[in-house]
View: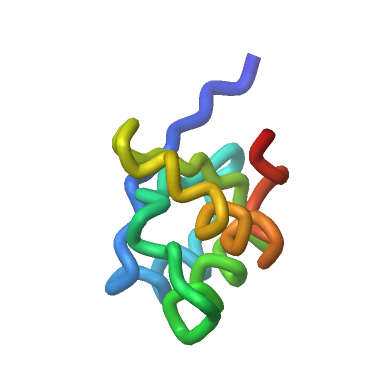
Length: 82
C-alpha cells in the first residue's frame, strides 16, 4: 500500500504546486474560491487538475450553487456533480 497525502491548495503557491513531484500527492481545493466564469483563477485550477488529483469541498450552504460548481467541473476539474 502506498501512503499518500493531500495538501490544501492556495493560489499563491501555484508555481510550487505545479513543480511538485511527490508520488500520490493530491490537493484539496475550497470550491467557492473557484466558482468564477473563467479567468486566471479557474485556469490555475485547471492546470493543477491536469497534473494532480484534486478534492473539491465547500460549506454545505454553498453547495446549492450547482451552476457555479458545474462550471468548475466542466472546465476539467473533476467529475460532474450529480
